[in-house]
Structure formats: structure tokens, C-alpha cells
Image 1 (cartoon, one colour):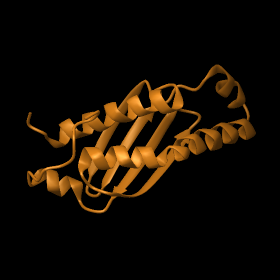
Image 2: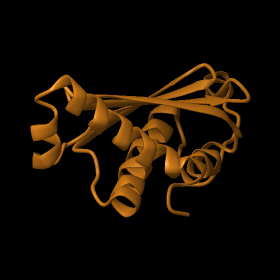
Image 3: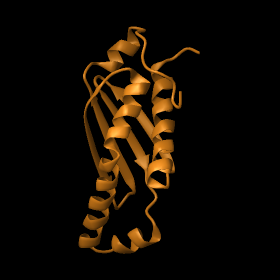
Image 4: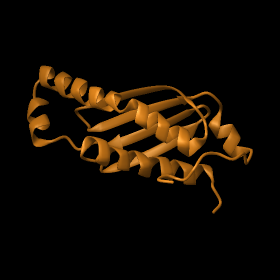
Length: 132
């Protein structure tokens, strides 16, 4: 199989959705990954539960949902970083995330120790397939 930038982006999207389902109990309805220099930027369409939607009717409730969802993701950050390292073959330097309770979009940014995009464009190898 020819492992291209697009292939790796798709594998990361699938692997993150799978991780969400296994770790959080539900997965995103859509995922899109972009590799830009030393960053992996993942955009996820998150489905809020009916209870979370009710809480989001107030600013205080929106903040509570946002904090809770971010803490849940951060509690699994080590596993997420390991997943990215396995797929790319590169260590994750840092992870950043935010969730919009208004649009249901979560953004996750993984900063790597090297320029993955350049390595892919040069045809350098990278990590294992998702689930391998």
C-alpha cells in the first residue's frame, strides 16, 4: 500500500474516532485530519447528549460541559499521544484541544518533535497502520 499524506490523515481520523468510542463511549459523527508542518490538526463533529444540550442553554452550563469534555479527553491524553506516535513514528511534543458547545466542533492539535509534512513529502517512512 502506498502510504501518502492523505492516507495517514484518513488513518488518524479513523483511529481517533475509534479511540473516542472505546474510551469515551461515543465517537464523533465526522472527523477530518490535516497534517501541517509539525502539527496534526483534527476537527471532530461532537454529538452532545440531550442533558449536555440542556446545560448549554446557559453560559454557566456551556462552560461546565466544555470543562468536563476537555477533562475527559485530557484524562486519555497519554493513550492519544501513543496512538499518534504509533501511526506517525514521531513523538508528540504537546496536545492542545478546545470544544465549541455552540457548534459541536472539537479541535485537537498535536505538536510533533519534527516536521511530519516535510518527511511525508520527501517519501520518508512513518509508523504503523491504525490498529496494528
